[in-house]
Length: 389
Image: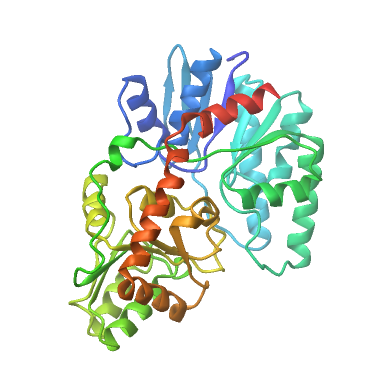
């Protein structure tokens, strides 16, 4: 039993690896932003409380020392229909048992672990249940069916009656949450946290250099907009523009994308690179003249950190209002129409033809960058404040 412990349920990531880095005073080098699990360890240290953290994995993991316990949960399996809801109940049951065994008095659960309303038994048993929500609760302009409306009612019931507070990653999520909760719970918004030194190497791009280099970073999936970007690049080339697009990331459509590039005779202008480590990715970021984040409206987007990292690296970024991150960097971004390859094509063309405008976007980034280096706006500080409410 870990009396007065804080339990943290993550939805993904290698928390074991992050903890070993944190314990040894080393940074987890696998991503640019500070990991949320690492910030949870910072929170426990600040509160002088023991931490218990769990994450889904196929492996059996257990680390138990004087300050923290790191343990594995069974890996999630994707289901649809009634099987999805049964899987959510199964995930909730496993979480209930794990929390009860830990003896934790406060519980922080990331969205995606299980349906929110299924966390009510933890609150009824006397624990404070906090949520860390990183993804929109519903897609922009989504037409909700009766099943989704019923789920929202259940979640609203949980928010109003049993949720001790929420951490949210964007203004969009905050607005949706206030609607469901009838503004009855404390909410704190957090920003991803970065280090100045990681971006000191970047100078503004030379917009007039040819070919004009376009960079995509993310999952290689249809609903992430890869086909819209490829179509935009193909049309730009057909219209006489010299462009190159680099796709960095893994996904189920990677092989098909590579094949489509060949069949479209774009081998000299479009390239796939798979998953890259941080130094390699930084090199592509430095070479890029624009970053494009073309997520489609069919995808419930979270706070896409690529949008923010593009601005921190002094690169123009093109995305749509499907990405909540746009709200945080609007003055330094070019907004395209979602699900519209022609709109992305026009935005890229505008940057190519108007280098002065592209430079103004980069300069505008100076007004928004500092918030992402500010520890007082990051997850640890906001979680600390929320738990004092």
